[in-house]
Amino acid sequence: MPYIMPAQRMAFFFSPKAGGTSLRAFLFHVENGFPFRNYSVQGQPVDANKLTANYRFNRVDHAAIEGYRTFALLRDPVRRFLSGYSNRVLHYRELSIEAAGRELLQQGLPPDPDISTFVENYIGYLQCSKPMARHFLKQQAFVGTDAGFYERIFRLEEVDELADFVNAACGAQARMPRLQTGGAKLDFFALDEDVQLEILEICRTDVAFQLFPDYWEPYAHLVEGETVGADALWQSVTVG
Image 1: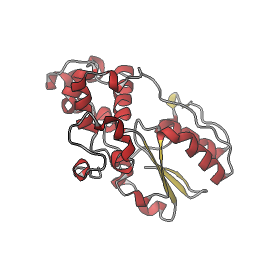
Image 2: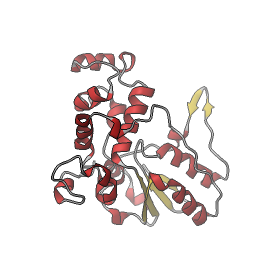
Image 3: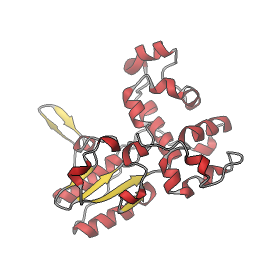
């Protein structure tokens, strides 16, 4: 579900690996007047991700937020993909023998894949790990495809603008933290060209490219015959 603030009648939709952990902590600060910090309950750790579960858009109880001001946060799909690989595969090792050994054996895939092996066997690896499969869903699975549903859609690159907007609207002075940053930072344009093309093929139907065509511009020259905003680019975009 989105992060809902009933007193302010606001609801914020976001996707995994698109600033959601930081956004949760920020909105907690707005609501409560003090910063969020990790804590434990009966020995069980609670971090910012536990503040609200991130359901798919079509599973949200939309009647519960009727009349709310709705907002979304999106990220460049390619950067989000690389962040997901770096954080979930390299940092958390969700495709290690320890985490997914039996599933990897069933798929005949090596553990701890490098980026080239991962994209070449993308579907197979996602079948090895439910958390991985969820993190790599396209952003429309969590925010939908209708921009008209939202009062405003922010981009992760302008997250400070989002913070200023919400603070002004709520009379708050909350700070936007930088959380869930584990993992190496990968440069898309330093990857082999065949890996770049496979990543673009995976990411190309993400709704963020439709809503913000300038996200596609840095990559357009790599895909012969494609133009920003071409109908063919979005024909496969669906919710869920």
